Image (cartoon, rainbow, N blue to C red; front, side):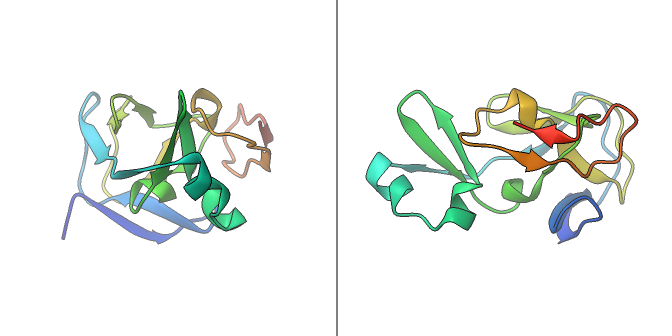
Length: 124
C-alpha cells in the first residue's frame, strides 16, 4: 500500500488520506496531470470540469489521487510545483486538504464543508 489512500470523506465525497505520518515540508501528493486543448476541455462532462486547473492557455485535468484532495480553510498542504507539500505535520489517517482559494480553478463556486473555525463557507 502507498503513502496515501483514497476513500470516503466527511468533507465531500472521496478524499485523500495519509497512510503514514508526514513531516512539515514533505511531499504528500505528486500530481498526475493531463494537458487538454480548449476543445477537449469544452467536450468534458460538467462533473469532470470540476477537476480542471488553468495555467495560461493550458487546461490541466487532475487525475487520481490528486483530484480527491478536498478543500479546507485550514489546509495541511500547499500546492508547489505539481505537488501537495505538508505545511504542518500530518498523522496517519488524517485527510489531506488544500486551499482551493489559492488554486486557479475556473468557474469555482461551491459550499465549503471543511468545518474549520475559520471556514469561509463559500469557495469562489
